[in-house]
Length: 170
Image 1 (cartoon, helix red, strand yellow):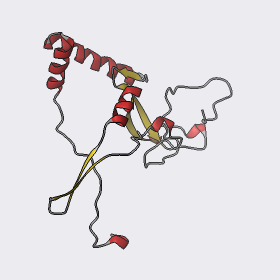
Image 2: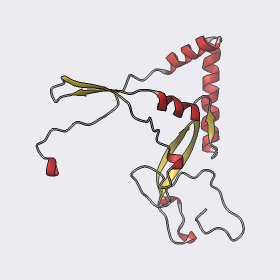
Image 3: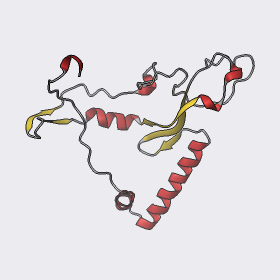
Image 4: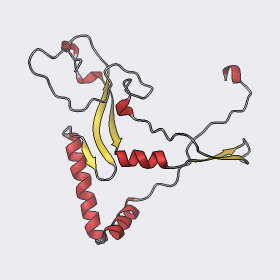
């Protein structure tokens, strides 16, 4: 396409492994914690219900050992408060913020890259030697992503403001 029309290009993508089933995760957690699979299943189900309930109530909920999760929206902006309506919502989303430990683990994990030619033959293997920078949407003033929809940031909380401060810029 464009100036590279007819030229083969190499791109980098992650190699995905199969998704682990819930039952496999529960069995492994039961083994590591010394409780029965049945007890772990009940705890797993209860934790899932609590997280779902609290997220739908607007809370950012801790996911033990991983980070926090909350629900959010992307929305269009309008010039006056009178125009604010739910029709401005463009997307509902799940926002996950990894813990410092998870970010550190990712940063310290070397990445193996295998390059294949167009016929599927391995032509190069590379082990990462980068700084291990981890994307951090919470420290990105632009809000991250490619959808630069005004008003679509990731601010926590919500609700209303009191007094004369309701200029929509909080």
